[in-house]
Image 1 (cartoon, rainbow, N blue to C red):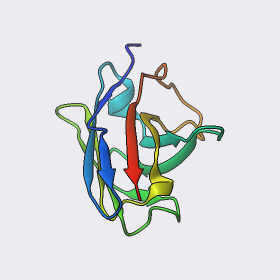
Image 2 (cartoon, rainbow, N blue to C red):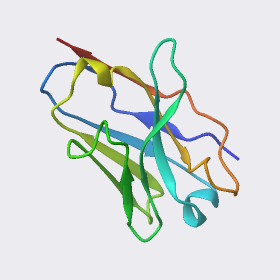
Image 3 (tube, rainbow, N blue to C red):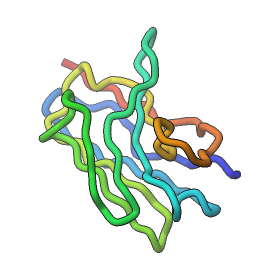
Length: 118
């Protein structure tokens, strides 16, 4: 399967906003719950938000109320709207199918860097 292509990362000040996009291809997007993951230096990759094909969402406690995940099934694109950003949100952000559940997943893409300055 082709890797997802993440984009939209940038350097922003604390309190700012960013919108990430993830362009996918193939069949996985159409049959799986999709998620946004992040990996900070020296830490494991973690799932921060997920969304089913039908639009049901789930968030990590650390981003709940600040991040919003959405998807365009026709375009096979995943989005993450990030508001009220904090320095601890600094990480490389990736998208993939929900790896905590059984099913096909993409190879990991390059990710997109989000840096939040204090």
